[in-house]
Amino acid sequence: MRLGFAGIIAVAILALELVGIYQIGQRIGLFWTLLWLIGGVVAGVMVIRRAGVGLMPELAESVRRGHEPFGVLWATGRRFVAGVLLMLPGAGSDVLALLLLLWPTRTRPLAARGAAAQTRRAGDDVIEGEFRRED
Image (cartoon, rainbow, N blue to C red; front, side, top):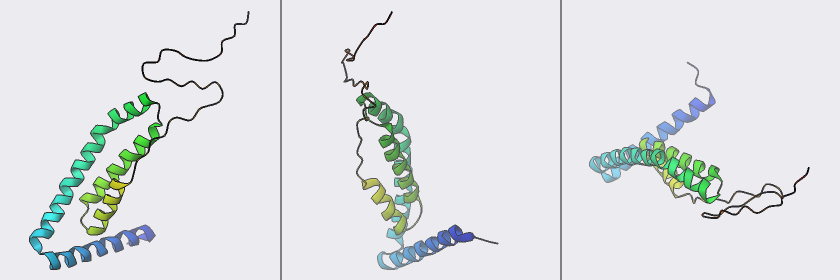
């Protein structure tokens, strides 16, 4: 059986996570360790569910405000990955998941695309621009 470099890294990370769980279990006890592991799975499922349910409304609101939709997709993708990491057992994956969840999200307005770019605000029915009629 040939693992390859990525497989070796994955097995090494898994082994480190298992050693970490054992060490944490020795320090805080079996009950608290199991509670932490089960809580991580529940939290991961909740984060994934919230990321999936909130995607379309957040995307629509971003487009309505005139912001780039990529920011919303990036934030939702980070939440999904964080949820998966929370469901994996181990302190390292939980710390990485928390870093992904705490990463600040910024949305930028869409950049003007040339001189003829139009901007609209909510409730604004006037489109500014130049008009020239040629016969």
